Image 1: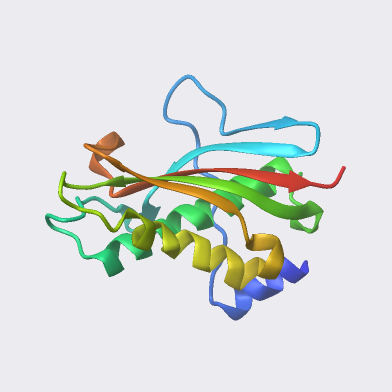
Image 2 (image 1 turned 60 degrees about the vertical axis):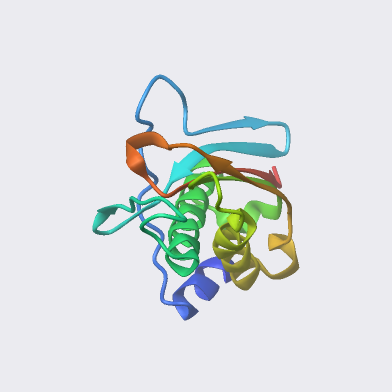
Length: 154
């Protein structure tokens, strides 16, 4: 068990199997030491986490949805690393999309659910650059979608 897996276990998190792509794209691309992970939509063991911030979801519910996106990002990264998360050097950047109403302005607070989770699991290696933007809608009506870039060791 890697240190990352031990920390996940301490938090009561088991990484799921990495979600399969829903269309004609790959879940991740590795270029040199950088892994680009395609957008992961908010879902948990019960299925898709749907909703629109500023309408039928609270910021806390949105942050929980973003946390689930981060869990899926780590599951994809595990696949990209051949099952060995100890190859992770750091999180480089997250880009978070929040399904929200025109007047909703707390997108950063929603994406904090992913950022805070990654720092709690990875420590300083989880600190990253980030964008958090609004979207008029997201695939399948989900609340949040997040893509990421990670640096890994060979």
